[in-house]
Length: 502
Image 1: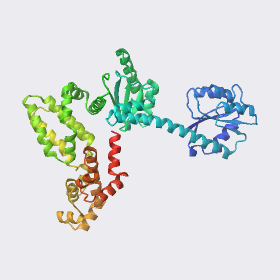
Image 2: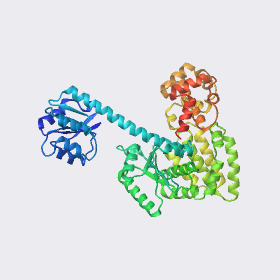
Image 3: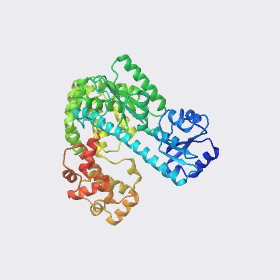
């Protein structure tokens, strides 16, 4: 709603303006009224409006004086009871949108309002577009999707952003469901206005903070001020914030951001004691951290996406044994934490909150090779076994059918083959499936295959046609058609969008 203030010294005019049109039906809301310019100025100190509709000729402070002394610059429509063009000319020089002669014509007022609405919308879009482009560039850079050289070129459009080394980067993660009146964009603008810092709204809903503070004392003051503002406006929400050391190089920005993500995740999910343990394991030794990331690498994630669990398990088993011989459970825990993080963020498996927290807690306190291998198997089962509590509401036969679909989705299957597998009439099985799952067998199978295709698109380098074959589509054209039906874009477009947005 566009907030409006009405200003006129005639009570009947004010009352008539309230009733002349259905303001809210056209996207406007009258939030304040004043009987002269002086009263309007006092009101504007506490209320921010986007549009002021004011009479020109008023006692104490007329309409033109009001326009000249406004604390901010809303759109203005002027009302005049007579044709005093000198007043109107001055008003036009002051940037008024339009002037209307009394008595007010309903159609003319509405046309003026809609023109103002279009201008306000256009200004908002232009402002948002500028912010979106900046945020998109930052998001791609910190996730490794944009090279430093290209990022710096884009930042030339934002000369106020300090890009020197020595800056710090932070990540604020908020449980937005707990704050109904605030959104990531609103908090972003609020923090920038209150603190004068750069705040980037990421597509994940997290906020990236960019501090250009180098002096240690000034940094402590800036951090303290930041925490005060966050506590004031997000007091009802569960939120965590982590920040980096002063940046000594921009070449490793992806690794720095990745560590902030991991720290944020652990801090949000774990109680303070466990978080301290996790932070000590995962972040205390840069050499070990680098080694962890070399072991849990992209090729391994691709193997998991392809369902090669035994190959990965065998490789990690040898590594765990070597570390266990040296009693180096520190590194085993670090590897499992990294793997858990990948499981949650790179795969479309169902991750129950309590289950995930429990898994992290167990990893932090493991004390043997056997425990490590047990946790590893649990991680893999969370990917390979898609059945969850939802299936328990189905009859035993439909539970078995659904589990079979999830475990064998890449095979050629139909109601006829499933009927033979479970000794049921195919027509009866189809009717029973539709009744319990609230979805046809064909649609359900397609959805399962498309979800697995998305995992492969995100975590492997295979071409789309080959991925279609892997998830059960023998005809690439049919795979493309089904993927676009469910995701509204082609497989390659989906991959590009996801990669570009981190």
